[in-house]
Amino acid sequence: MLLTLNHEQNGQITFKHGIHPEYYKELTQHLSVERMPFVEEYVLPLSQHIGAPSIAIVQKKQKVERGEMIAKPGGFVSVALHAPVSGTVTAIEASRHPNGQLLPAIRIKADPFATQRFEAKTPPVLEEMDQKQFVALVQSAGLVGLGGAAFPSHVKFSIPEGKHCKFLIINGCECEPFLTSDHRLMLEQAPQLIKGIKILARFLGVEKTFVGIEVNKADAIAGLQSLIQKEKTVMEVVPLQVKYPQGAEKMLITAILKKEVPSGKLPLDVETVVANVGTAVALADYFTRSQPLIERIVTVTGPGINRPANLMVPIGTPLHEVIETCGGLKPETTRILLGGPMMGVAQKNLEVPVLKGTSGVLALTGQEAREISTYKCVRCGRCLQACPTSLNPSLLGLLTRKGLYEEMKDEHLMDCIECACCSFVCPSGIPLVQGFRVAKAILREREAAA
Image (cartoon, rainbow, N blue to C red):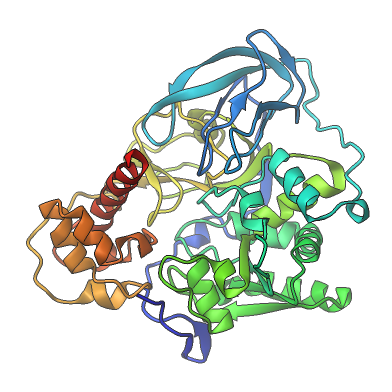
């Protein structure tokens, strides 16, 4: 099963299929990023990314400084973890994780007398390192994809022998409804973004870089185009149609490069690496002032929050503290999501912390999060028209209900990007993508056991 080829719709670059949900970005798109006040305690789960958890290298009662490494990578597909504040380690224990599990975490009590400023250090000298050293530093900086997937960045930036990266695509689409953190970052940290892109392009050895941005962010497009012209670099801003999931990396490649990523393959198999704008800025922060990934921009929004905002939040900040900073929840709030409404994860505990991959906190009322009845599939074919990877969600849903997971694998289940387009358009209210996630997890467990 191959991805469909690029084409234009209404004169704008995009991919085939997908959906057009309401975007609801007006709540926060014009709000500048503000720094969240530091709180009393932080919770740092050792599992914050795809791959092996980090391994704690601190002990209870140990004092730590802001930006100090507190956990080392647990393997190649793993990254380091750093203290978001200066303070004292109070415990290393199982804590509630946003995925619903109890997982090991480092608790840090902030020092009330510390300034909590990150003291910039002499950055690594780029001219003196090779590609392997660059990858090792990215891993030790704790960098992951900040678009939501939290895939360790150094793995993506490692070019295996025999492979070549010809194109770099920077993802500034932010196609999820409600979220505006990437939009504000592109407006407020554009020079740092350009620095990060140039550093990454240099070590990947790319021929050209593209920055994909949806046309509803016209101010970000204009600002970056102006900077790029002054830089005289081999970089191009590509305005893209407003459509979900335009920001999925395979969709971006299809739209911008007119290339297919074969089933079961990676972007590097078509000589391309895709990175989020937030990841590029975090890269620049590390290679210009040695600041590891200890904070990120989070959009706090939705009809259920009293004061929507874009906040710079230290990693590990408890969710209830973030909500309190934004004036608390309205009485009619019924659901809290970490992330956007399409791929976000509902939370039942406000003690869970903000992770590296937390792009938003979304508060919904009963009007938006109302329960719907589920009926039998009416074979309308809407899910086939919506699926951006040209799968057959209706057939996969039937196989899910029958527990025929191996057969689902034969129908290219593992190519599903879990965008939830199929669930969104289903007139029968069938929770298709939720079943696919369960099936994929079961198949991975079976493979690991084998």
